[in-house]
Length: 275
Image (cartoon, rainbow, N blue to C red; front, top):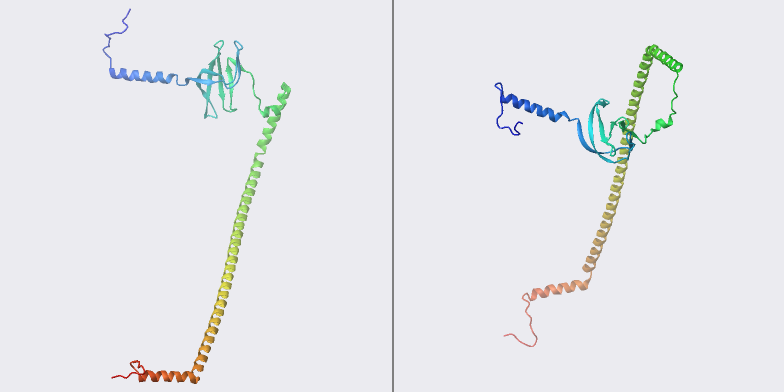
């Protein structure tokens, strides 16, 4: 037997450590990406099924340790399709089903069968087509050929019809655009008329308020003038009464004379003589 952990190793004469390192890295990368399409996952059954080997019933939403595999085919050349593989819990039979993006469902492939296949509303409404005989298929093919020939012959006439249809559509679109422009013009005019009417009403209201304020000022001025006139007349009458009253004039003269005779305001008491 050879050693489990060899100490002495043989290196050939043409051994290049750089090339050996490159080769080992390349092999490691290849080993990593070898089973990239296969992955172990934990999944739940999307529908109830039955194993074909042991007739074991597998309910919906049961958990399994399965494998996910990416298939080469794609739906609409863009959506990926996966194959999911599980093993039967009774007999370890492999059961595989794949995704169906077109119908948002799954398709059973190997090892089992679905217990219930849901039907679409279109399939229920349409009756099942009967099996055609050979004569019926021949008649159907002949009719299809005749229809194709008629369509090919009518392509030239249809081209003119298509041009007429395009011209009519263009004319209709132009008419719609003109109608829209007219409607916009009418809306603008209505807005301008409404704004003008509002401005006129505001101007009238302002003029009325100005006229009312002017009238009030005139009334106030007239009343003040009348009051002043009345006050002036009363003062004149008082002056006239004072001038023509003899009692009032004598008192004033005596007061004036007394102030002149005793300018210092000396008070002389009777019965005593000044020395």
